[in-house]
Image (cartoon, rainbow, N blue to C red; front, side, top):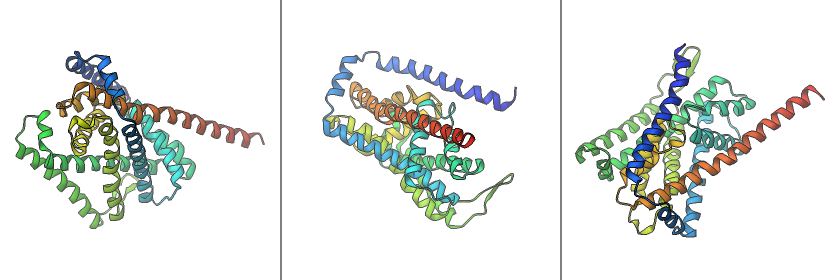
Length: 316
């Protein structure tokens, strides 16, 4: 069996093990929590904060569409916002729920963008640049959190505050070096016949705006679902979200199931457990479940239209 085939089986197994392990950890942490307490926390969320959570969801998915548009600009393709938004929304709604290891965003993107003239190589570059944009935003936000809210990291790791701040400065420095390198117009990277050109400064600036915006939008869902009297800042919630969402993605668990909840609670132990669970349920509903339903409908309609077009061409 080739390494590629082994890897195809390996990542789903890793994701499944991550779900099982995090489920065990959650059971240890949440065993005393009652469903009634969570329901009461959900009922206590005011209507206006539900509205702000929905708005935060729109901001997050709008920024994700910006990821694609930035990558397309880098490749020299200029497509309409409507088409890009539909492709991006479907891609992320599916991959966030199913897991990038089981259902690559490249599949949906290639199926859609190939109809607009993009090659498989260009779609590969687009996927890589979108992933890097997210990573860039996570490093930027993570560095700021470690500098201004270093106490959060102590809930996960027993490290001196000065070390946490030092890592934060290094993270921000790496982002700064990336921007400086873009100003130097480095030579393109050659991978076989494919040339990967270093993003122009205008592209990098857009990355540095889009990525934090997406993370803050997603974190806003949780923040507005938490009770106001919890006494936590938006910045602290954003830091906890970056840590937990990054861990969820690295785990390859479908939807980050269990991993997201465990890490977030460990970073924010000062908030009542029922309130944390309720806020994360709202996050999963608005950011994962509802978008997944819409994405499935959109993909089915897209494939139906393509099937009708193909049939019409063959049988005029």
